[in-house]
Each structure stands twice: as structure tokens, then as C-alpha cells.
Image 1 (cartoon, rainbow, N blue to C red):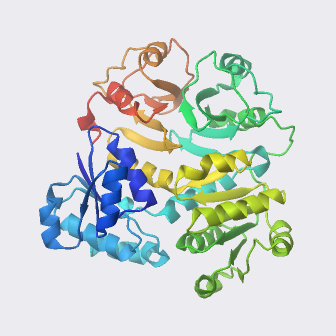
Image 2 (image 1 turned 180 degrees about the horizontal axis):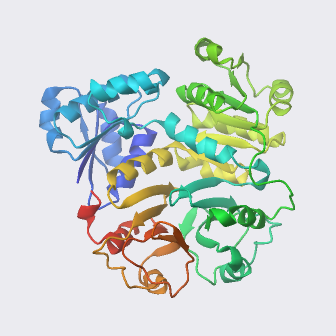
Image 3 (image 1 turned 90 degrees about the horizontal axis):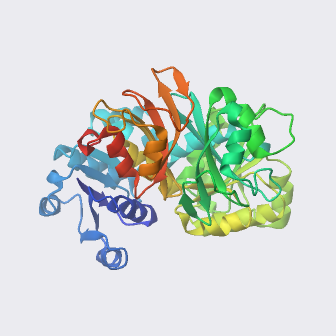
Length: 470
């Protein structure tokens, strides 16, 4: 498969490196800046070509018309849209423009992009759209329970959740087999762990350790009970938020504006802070009709932080363009004992650093975008795919009638392939408990986890042929 990515930046480089690890995908990055191309090809070992993607002569020279997929992820929304329109006119099957500006994402503008520019609106990459859904799913839950990630599975019949194993936790120091035996009534499957920033699939003899990030799958009927047990907190409150929390958004990006509008529409009381004079005016102009207050203040000022942020908010979202700005504010608020901080990062370079200081709610933009691309790329029998920590993938798919897994037991599959099964939906309504002797059948909806380097092997086992994926 031939993939061309236009634009060099932290997110596009991460996407290119991630997809280039797949032997079946030939990735080329293009950019107008010759120096950036040279840096990428020398340091990242990614194929790169310097040139203007909207030049017809250049598109012919790189054979854009032979590409299977084109992604434009520059900082300029207009270039992304126009180059995707050009790629579409050259019959590139899948085109994906990266769009940040709010007015391009409104319903009327999306209609124009679809009809006039021939761009499939489902293919638009927007950190705002994906992140609003992500944040909204997190805010549905009581923040006291320390839930980090929430992923809906099997048409919302089950969830994959993650949380951290704390020093005082009941789970700390216990074996996986012991934990699953204790919780066997509620059918919890611990499918993956991230330890010291490395993902691995645990076995029955694996001991949980402090600061492990635990991924577990449970059906909705047992969701509340499992969260209570895993959170290890003596709380009587529901795991669901009874009242929508006050949300403070601190930033200087388009994402700041988009999140403020969408969360206010969802019924959250939103306040925006920025220390950028230009963005303050821009936000105030665009947010006035939504009655969202905008404050042109530096929250790194201790008195402002204490009087404006700490006393008046439940949840803080940090959405600066620079990761370092978000990190400085996150640490300042954390040292002042604010717990519910969601820190946005362009990539995962600072992830270990923030986890060291107890800032666990990280929204890593490149991971969100990669998940969206892979869901578009691996269509067909795959229902959903989530990238975890850029090192693992959680996949939900349907077992094809050609599948090599039919008639095989869970024990056989997990012993011979680098995956962990989490849950199975049979006949569209029967949730099957994962046991070693459970036999896979045609049409089963299977959810499993695997490291990104091995995930294609598993896909071939359940679907047999990559031709059914692309």
C-alpha cells in the first residue's frame, strides 16, 4: 500500500514512523521545506521528497495518482483541504485532511467540503472532534474513581478502562490469576499493562506493581462493581458523575476554542483562560454568543491560580500549542493540590516525566490521530481500533468465514499468537466469558489486545487475508 503524507511536524512524523513499521505500507513524507525533509530522512529513516503538493508538476513527479491513501497534516487548514481535493481528483481512494479551525467543522462547511471539494467528511482528521468525544466520555464518570481511559466496545455493550495501580491499592503485589479469581463473578479480563512506559501482555503469574497502568475489559452489567473494586476506594457515590463539573480550559490554540464551545453545548459550565493578548480577543469574539467567559490572565501567577482556578473549578484542560506550556501549568496546579488535570500533549515525549509527578490524565494528540487513521485504513471486518501508548492496539473485529481461528480455543490462540482476548459477543447479543476452553466461531465479535509490532499477525488469524482489511 502506498501512503503519502504532506507536512512535517511532531504529529505527522509520529504518524509516518508508526505506519512505516508496517511492512505492507510504503510511507513517503512531502514538504516544501528542503531542510525539514533532509532532517527527517537522515534522523528518522523515513522516505521524504521536497516540493509543493499543490503543484500539478510535483504531484506527477511523485505519482500521487498511484497512491492508495493521502494525508495532509500541515498547520494550514486551507492547504490540507485543497491538496486533498487535488488528490481526490487524481482518484486517490482515501484522502484525509487535518482541520483545526472551527468554521470548517460546522455542519454547513462540512456540507460544502463534501459536495464542492469531494471530501468524505468521515475522513477529516480533527483533534478537536476526536478529543471532544474523548473528554466527554471521561467526564461521564465520577473523577474520584481515578479512571484514566474509557473505550466503548461491542456497540456499547462493554468497556475497556484503564487506571493506575497505587501503592496503597489492594491490587498492588497480587498476581493476575489471584485477582481474576477473586473477581470471577463479574468477569473482568486484565488484557494489558504499561510498566515503565513499556506495554506487555500479562500472564497468570504476573504480579501487579505500583504505577502499573492496567487495561481491563468488562461488560456493562458489571461495570460499576468492577470500577469500585479496581479503584480500591471506599466510596458510596456512583461511579457516574451526578452533576456535570465546572470546566476550566487554559490555552492558546484552536483546540481551546473548539473544546469550549462543544463542552458548553454538552451542558458543562466552561471558563477560558489565556495569557495571549491576541487569542484573548479572538476567543472573546467567538465565545460571546455562548456566554463563555474569557480571562486574559497568567495562571502561573500564584494568586490568580489560587483565587480563580483552584476555588472555582473541578476539572482543568490544558490546551496550549506548546507541550512545555501545558506541563508548566500542570505542575503548578498539581503542587497546589488540584487533582483533575487533563494535560494535552502533541506527542508522548513527556509522558514518563508527567507520570512521575502524578499527572495521569494525558491526552496525546498523535495517538488520537493515529487511531483515527488506522480505523479508516483497516476497514471491512474491523469495527474499531484504539492505539494505546503508541505501543499497543486494542482491536474489535468480526471473525470471517475463512478465519484460521474458527474451532480454536482461547488457550490455543493466546499460546501461539502474541495477543490477549478480552471479550466476545456471539449472535449479536450473547456476551461470552473468556475461558481457556472457549472455542471461536464464525461471526464472533472478538476484542483483543496486542503490541503494535505483532497486531497484523493476529488480524490475519481472525480474518486470514490482508486483502479483506484494505
